[in-house]
Image 1 (cartoon, rainbow, N blue to C red):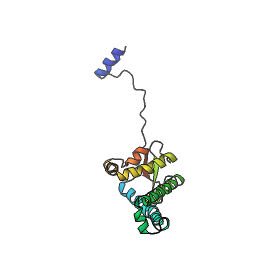
Image 2: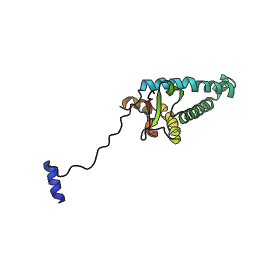
Image 3: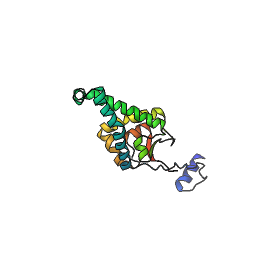
Image 4: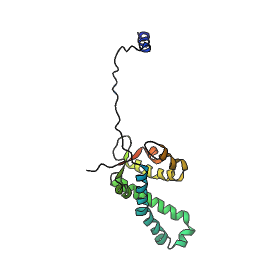
Length: 164
């Protein structure tokens, strides 16, 4: 019986219609890199720079002392920036001030819902890896979905929000 079905299939005769229905995955309208860059710059100027100035002038006292302890100054600034971004993304449905200003949000790629707290934390720390490596930085320009290394690792994506 199995040989006969194989021969029929090989000859192009279909004995029984397939019982499997194709499930269409919804198309996701990914955000463009230029819009994501605007959102990132907004976050840098609204969140990162005030923290950086606070660390330089309040924590270290002045620019000269901060210059002597560059690694500490950058570490305090970067960790604080990531923590604040994680809080914004978790409390505000996957949006930072920059993403909100550009009408974007971060979603889980599989569920198309708000990402979990772990996913948000992992995405933000993986973003540091993305920025520091040439491969991570450039790969989003060669992908059709325009997802960066941090998005692929955390299974998230950035999409435009639907205006109500």
